[in-house]
Image (cartoon, rainbow, N blue to C red; front, side, top):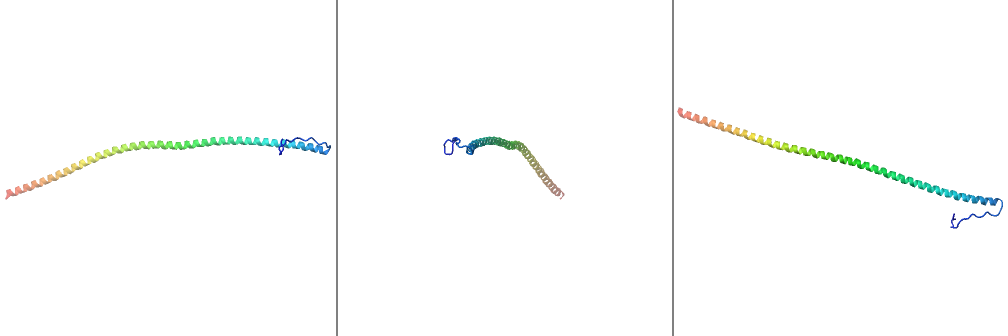
Length: 155
């Protein structure tokens, strides 16, 4: 391993002192090696945990995208279903309007025929009334002439 100064760190040979110092140096050397191993293990554990977290995040992201697409599809289907129903209703209304328009046209023609017949009947009744008045007038004139002739012959 490199030291912070960039130089390679070498294990120093144990001092030639005997006794307590030699065992402490060995213990420190062993502790440093153990610390390096522990630090290396912690870095590896962190990288593994980060990788797992990244994988889980990607999986969750893909799952969320799939669910969002599904929701979007369901919403589109719901809206399209309403639009399709409206379209069918519109076509039915248009057919009903055409049928009603035909019926109205037929009733208008029939009404015109009834009006013409009523007008002809009114005209005929008027003519009958005029004829009756004419008859009354002639009858009155005839009676007047008859009375006048009768008066002339009696005098």
